[in-house]
Image (cartoon, rainbow, N blue to C red; front, side, top):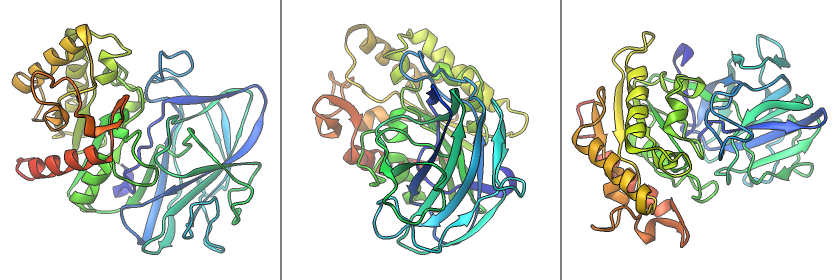
Length: 383
């Protein structure tokens, strides 16, 4: 991203939903984030007022849908205490400004940066990002809806600098964050993980950072930038439209592409359609004139307990990825091999890796297995 800022967290900041209400309101959103480094940090925030990927069948939010008009009334970064209860350490809140102003009117589809902000984040503490948003009736700002992977809170009114947690209530499925939370850092590579809920880490333990992208970030260390833009319900054909979501992936020097589950499932794509969408994505990344020499890691499609026609599509696409991947693919990482049951049940995820007996989303144990395999594999590659 701009001025050598790289993602400060492994938490996904992708959007798959849009706020829609009948009346104007003002509300504060506060999120606790474990950053990849602590100490003296130069932070900067970037936002894209658009939906990245389609939620469900797209009745409310579709990939590349523009956000509406809304206002940032105030924004702050602060230091967490020893509890994630909506409170911050007294005196630690620092204003975030936009072109020197404390407030910012946001236009549909607008992309914008904050000013830089300096904070001393002690080891063992998390960054708390709070912003107060005023939204008009109708559709306004975009966000991510899913079971949350981090602690997030909401409060009515302008409470972005509030130190006590009593006024805040816990959010269950609404993560309202800037699209990019960056810190100034020189890195060897900027790796972007473009995927769905499996990449995002959905169903792993809240505040546990045990999904595989987070574990990979820990294993590689801060010399590698890691930006997670995995998004629940996302599909390859969202990215293939070359909209705001794919534009984010083009910022990386290495792009890891982990898509296909939702294309096969809710998207009902054929093997040919899915392979064509993956080819388009890779071609758009490779031919980006603003960043040349980008390497693409294409993952096989993780097992998701598909059956009948969907199982056949899964098998066909993975065989193609392993033997004749789309043009422009630099290397293939076989995530399915790590997670799958032994043949002939390899289309099924190992039961021990399921988040529960009915849900094939990978759990934290699966996150460790995938991360360990990826790190060993990655260090052998000539990337």
